[in-house]
Image (cartoon, rainbow, N blue to C red; front, side, top):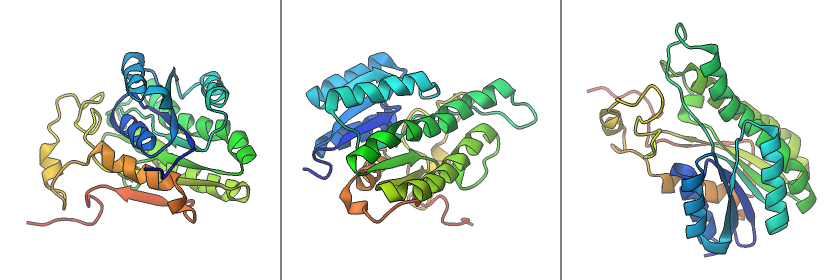
Length: 253
């Protein structure tokens, strides 16, 4: 398959879950992929399984110097950057009355600032190449509130706003910018394995969805692939919801 043949994609948070699925999907469709994460053993194993089509780098998305190295190494290795998937994200659960500022800011720095720094870092290279596609992973928590998740919700709402602003600014140089808003996906975070949710049984919530199941990382990856490919050439500044019908409306009975 060759939907993104010849393209070079940067994917953050790629050591497992959605990021790993995106890396595998992109390579299967002809792209070279640079994977970034802080989980080095997992990330290296994913990259090695993808042979010379992938490179893993330790990457802290909240730090400018890490982005500078990530982008420079990608260009040095593969010669260009066509796609960025800002996938890295963390979650912390606490009600507003109890959340510590340091915990709130930790989520903001990874989810929101990381997305901003990623876009800023690749713009010159994409513009030089004549265009590109930036895909920012938001969430359905960026479309509605969620009790106990003020830091996560804030960051995901911000990603939607940054995406639209970037689309307005970058369309003239051929860079498209879109966001994906997943619902619950079968990853450690989606299964309730994140900070503050270690003991949560989320199965009942997923059974209550119109599609009555949790989403698969591969399903999000295929949507990201569409946005990275020429098939979405007229899409920018848009939000693509993939949530099993969670936001379709209220269910009664």
